[in-house]
Length: 316
Image (cartoon, rainbow, N blue to C red; front, side, top):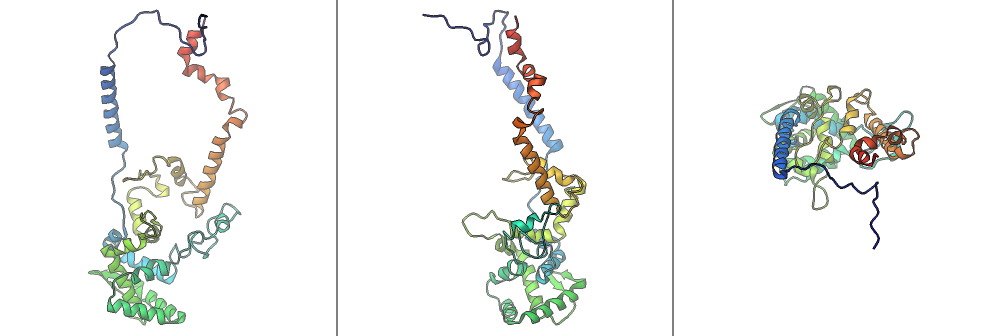
């Protein structure tokens, strides 16, 4: 039987030096207590507040006038969503990277009609109510010209729009069924039914919040809440999303670029951040092929520092 040959690259030398007792239970307990205390301290100092989700119901009750004005912008086609362009509509070129109209190339992938999706379809989902039913019938049977006149007159009358005791107050005008539709939408939002209508999608699980988020974003309430939490681009704020879904903890590098000029004020910020992340990702993938970079471990011999005990054992 041949004796097994010692392999210095993988085999360890038998320890012949002094020995002493080691209490692994005590060591593990101390380590657990230290890590637990450190975790609690860091969570207190750097943890994100557990802010409840902002819903349309909360918005409509906290700032009903802002909601009503947002709904009006969806009705008259002046909201940010209505004029955004791809991927929602063809109203604009969309975001671009220099001369490259990337959003236009991708096209309208999430077709959205604010008038239909934010106002008419939610109202039509409500239980039959004489006043609203008559208003929707009048709107549907009217010509496009008549509808435009109604909306224009209501928009002009809503210059000093107010909400008093849950009722929208605007100047009197020849605006047809528009006041009834707007009031019904506000009442629907304040009850929480609009959240359900906009979040309702085909399938058993409802996780697509595109419509309610776009509706919220078009108003000023969401931006005001973000400003209070120092989350706007120029404020350099970040918050880990609370609840059952991960937030910026694993997207920190992506969200970081939104705090840096010119992305924090650019109308093309999304595509600019995307381009930066694609370059960084490509660089990470190509590390083994980039001259100089791939030679860093070999030239710095950093691996010998990490495995210094092993290499010391190989010394004569």
